[in-house]
Image 1 (cartoon, chains in turn green, brown, cyan):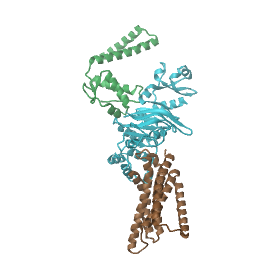
Image 2 (tube, chains in turn blue, purple, yellow):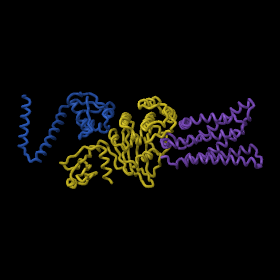
Image 3 (cartoon, chains in turn cyan, purple, blue):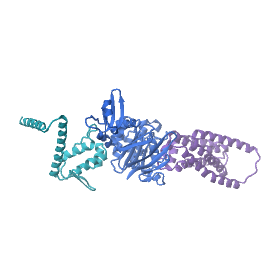
Image 4 (cartoon, helix red, strand yellow):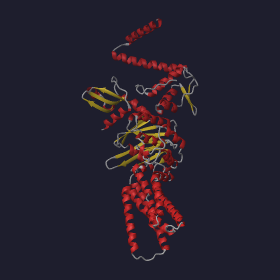
Length: 130
Length: 198
Length: 281
């Protein structure tokens, strides 16, 4: 498993770690029941703070992607597709919120947004055909 | 405290070797005062060790190691007394060996003890001074005392003194040291704290 | 448990007062003590080890009061590296090892020899012939060879070249792989602290300005470069430090309290410290 943490990125380190672990879990690279490295060892191997690593793990647990067994460690949870779907839906909502606010800032209304959506979908369709 | 004693010994190892050589030479010379010189000189060993401590600021670190301030001070006394004892022993051996060949003067316990007492007194007087004012000033004091003692000895020799029995002298000496040694150590510990290692 | 617990610590000197302040070093973490020369970092370390007597306040190290009789035993578990290596000149690494064997109950000869070898140090060379870098490496080797649970380092990496510094920071990183091991590292080389620390405590002119999680500091703060007019329009509460030039203003801000639309740059720990030090003046 590759984990690349960048100090120069504006994204907080715990978020970078969270995102990469999450993708690995959703993509199936980390399977259900796999044991994640201990918080401390991962932190030391990545040369990041233990506090930050713990934060990422806590968020993964909060989002149901992993669960901690006392004394044993952190295991990847059974892929609860509902939870994943919910998380993805939340993500879409956030993105749409930001689109709406930016559009408002430019003075664009709902119709213009939908126009853009059409154009984009057509583009994608074109790409797929070629 | 063993670590501290080893440190002092290893620090002055070079001087100690030269010194061992000198003791033997002094012992061979058939003049009793040379032994006195040897033993008293050995009382200065802790001073050389203290000089290294001062120069490297060892005590700044040592107070953060598992040693108490008392140990740091006491080790210098033990080192001095130990050096003195070792020289006395060495002198006795050399002179006894020479005695077998009828060279030089015989060794007497009183003789050795008196000289060790002188050395011990020297240690007890100079160490507190050094802990307080540093090695350089301490060395000056040391030479001052030695000078005064030699001069005093000279005059006392000339003067007519009443005979004091050996036993009275011994008791007096023991009492004096019973006060001098702890008193000196107490002063040194106080001085050590004041000198503000940090 | 806290490896170090400081409450109300204060020490007054002729022209300088340190504290009073509280500070906790949680077990298992690395805390960087940052501040300019003379800010009070070394004094703090002296006070923690009771090499210097405080005027007020208490310090507990590994749970033990540093002025109590049990503190002497606790020093067995504390590895110290000061800004200079205070060993008598005629001694060699080998001889020091021998002395330390009779100083620390848990002295591990094999471990010591390993460190001396890994750090490329000569066993039999007199200390007076060591370079500064070598002296510090030896002091670190000694500090790590008696099963210490807490390392206290005062400017231990200053004066070392970058390659050696990095090696040593790695050693510290490994040291805290064990959750019972903690490190207090004082330095004015902020970039070193940024690499390894979990917490940063900033001492400035004798006052503890803050003690925060390093990553949170870097998340919360950002740098903006704007015109004077834009700067003046901002809420002063979000400005933490400022640098003005004839051509504009550079400011350290809390990202969350900044109004939208202004470009915020990611900041390094060094910037945060520099701005905060300026801002307070």
